[in-house]
Image (cartoon, rainbow, N blue to C red; front, side, top):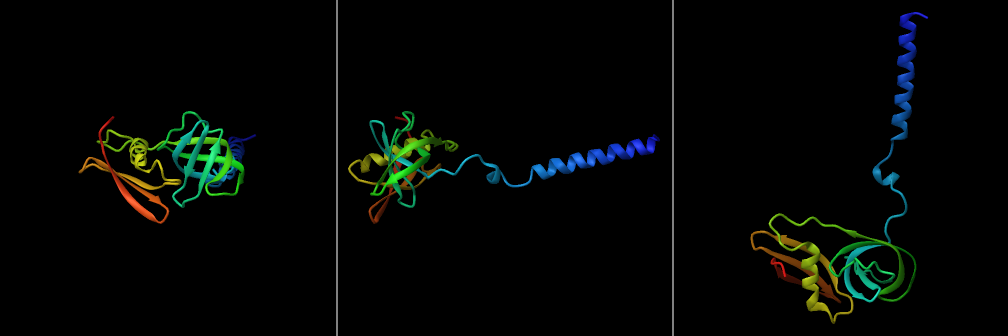
Length: 163
């Protein structure tokens, strides 16, 4: 076999291998994600024993049994679950839950979860407080946490100082 022919065979083989590799890598990350998306993403606004109340920004709310012990009030979580009991808030068993970590803003002493937890103290008697957003203002060195209850919304200011 001539050197030209051997080189041609190698080039053809490498081309086919490259094409097969590229074809196998098509699609976005979401297309290849394992499993279904979470049933709800929101903040833990209350905890009682092994239950947690998770409320999303769109006001959907679910009391989950079998809540992970490490989940704390103020943390944002994603929860996967099966059937839920129709009520408001709904009730379901958490099949899986993960805590969504938010990086601490530059210059902040409190984490987002700490600021939300502190803001929620004013709403302990509210049935379903809805955390709309939490933002840190470095110039004022404070957090602004927007919380909705029923049809009203209020911005709670939390001074950025560790407890």
